[in-house]
Length: 288
Image 1 (cartoon, helix red, strand yellow):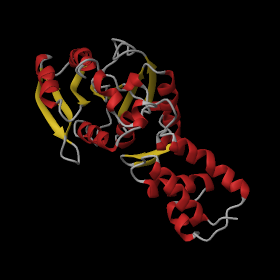
Image 2 (cartoon, one colour):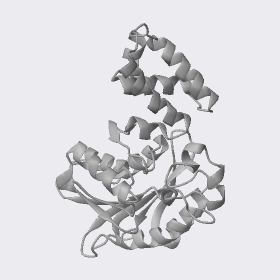
Image 3 (tube, one colour):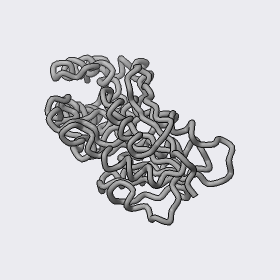
C-alpha cells in the first residue's frame, strides 16, 4: 500500500502539471478532506499506508481539481471573515478574501451596542457570506439576503442554518431590491455584484470561465451594468448608506454613480492588497 506522503507527492505533481498555482497546498487540502485529516495531521501521518478504500476516496477529488473545478466546491467549505466553515456549493460563486473589505466597511456604519433593529439588504447574496458575516457580528442586524439564483438561495439558507441565524434573516428571490416589500425599512444596502466586463470573461482562469456562474460575474459591456440599476434604487431606499464591491479599476466610475444618485461622503476603500475594492456613500439626509 502506498504511504500518505507518496500519494501526496503524486497528487502535487498531477496538479502542478495541470496549472494549479499552489499544487502542494492544494494536494494537502484534498487529501486531508478525503481522509478526514487536518493539514497538520497530514504531516504527522506521512508514513501512514493508505488502503484501497482510502485511495478510492482520494482519486475523484483529485480528478475534479485536475479539471480545474474550484477547490472550495470540492472541499465544500471556505473560511471568510471570522468564520472558518461557510458552506460553498457547486454552481455558486466562491467567496474571495478581498470581499472581506466590504464586510469591514459595512460594520463601521452599524452601531455595536444598539438594541434597535438595524436592517441590512445583501443584494446578490450568493453563498450569503457577506450579509451573514455582518449579521453574526452585530446582533441588532436583521438581514434581507437577495439573489436570483436557486442554487445561491439554497446555499445561503444552508449557511443561515449553520450559523443559527434563522430568526434574523429572510432569504428572498428576485432582482436587486424588488423582493423586499416597499414598507420594509432598509438601513444599509451591501452588494458584491457582477462587475467583470463581458469581453474579458473568457480570459479569466479556468476555474472562473469554465465553472463559476456567469450570472454572478458578467457586468455587461463595461462591467458597470448592474451598478447603474442598483445604486439609484439603493440610494432611494437605504436610510443610512450604500456599499458595493468593485473591480480594482472601477473606483472613479462607481463613485460618480454614487454621487449622481445623491449619496454623500462617497469614498473608495482599498482591500488588504491596497487595491480599490469598495465604494461607500451615505444618504444625504436621514430617511423617515
